[in-house]
Length: 178
Image (cartoon, rainbow, N blue to C red; front, side, top):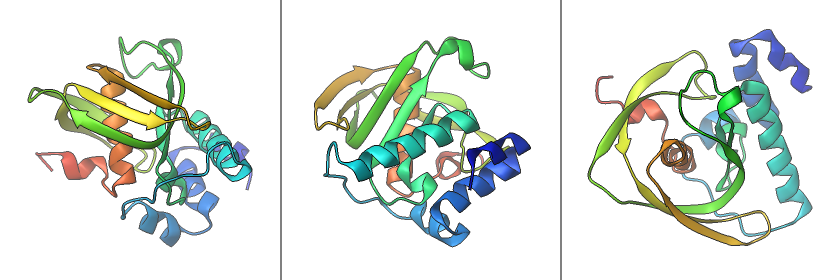
């Protein structure tokens, strides 16, 4: 299985996500259940998972990816985007690579924002999703370092979307007009 097949289009990319884990059923199940905590920091298995996630995200042109999307039942997320490379979203700024392990988020406001979301697991589909506008977050990185903060922008939306994957939720379940 080489990542070069990703150049063949969205359907091939979707199959790649499925094939990376072994079978369509494995990934489908991984996307349907809450993921297990990841606890082994700075270990070869975790570092390989991070590299697999990053390679997949870059080849598919995503801004974030969660381990269940490649069939791994761990609470691991990568978020990375740069405005110069993100042509489908305006004014999102830059987010250098963040490795997010065992994240926790808290909604800071009752205010919601609607955004046209897509997902690497549902290529070619997009839908309007309402999410809380601001979050507080905390997570560990790959070295076991604790990070925390607040965000009211694009990162908050991506973090919520990716954390949904960790809980077995795909964005269409958040759409009100589906």
